[in-house]
Length: 178
Length: 155
Image (cartoon, rainbow over all chains, first blue to last red; front, side, top):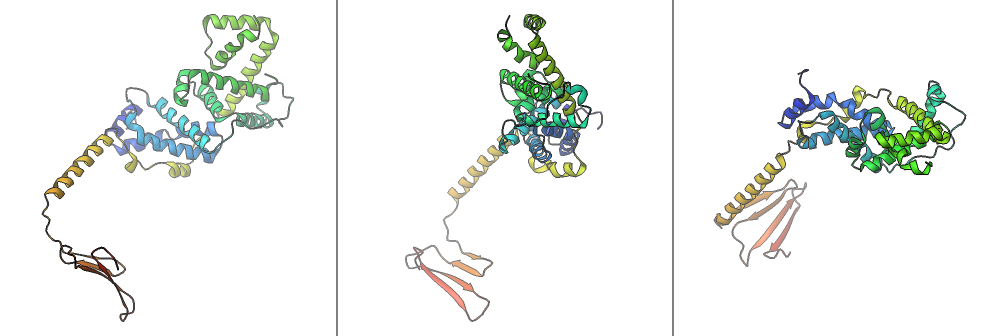
């Protein structure tokens, strides 16, 4: 069973093999959860979104094409579920973090210290879910703008805008005026 | 070239979509503009710091996985099932229709007893003079409640 690829397992699940589906979900439990958590920055919200994503995988596995890689597909499901959860909870686009202490000239160096690590966390919290989703897909998952646009269900130009705004905001909060 | 003219190129630079001629234009501007150079440095450093913070391992605990894992049995959808289910439903509806159409219209004797002790009895096909009775038994054997209806279900 260990040598079976995700795509083969997905094909088995599509044919009605429940054990294959359970195995597939178990294998990708953290792929989904890490994505929803990084986008939502709240464990409970991320758990709800992950649960919804797992359900969507079960419901829509028939629409997955096993000739393509499974991981990008499940990642897309996770991104959509996280964004839906964010809009369901009515989270405001970005939070006010003007009260950030200033005076850190080099965030990369200072990020080693817990105080600045906390600033980085709060700066990430200041981004909107869409900006964070684009940023996470780009910086952590290494997706290109075309893939991100597909995952988020928006145009490429919108993804570029989210990435620009995210980086501008992070630079403003962490690295002086940007 | 002014900062304003490379404004759109910042969007492409931020998303890693800056190549070829546009990239050269962007780099040339940065060589001559210290403000844009400082901005790029701030972008790159904050992006790296945020990326480092985000890349920390995130995992579900076994208890959380038990909580959120779906039961694939009732939810598994193999794609072709909706069409098969729709066809089966249409076939069933057609079969029921045919049976009802050709079924003899003979009188049916029927008795329905509900949990509350309600008994409803219909002996023959309804006639003008027919009356229906609903009897309800209570815990006290001396007390019985009886409703009598005519054919139009008037008390």
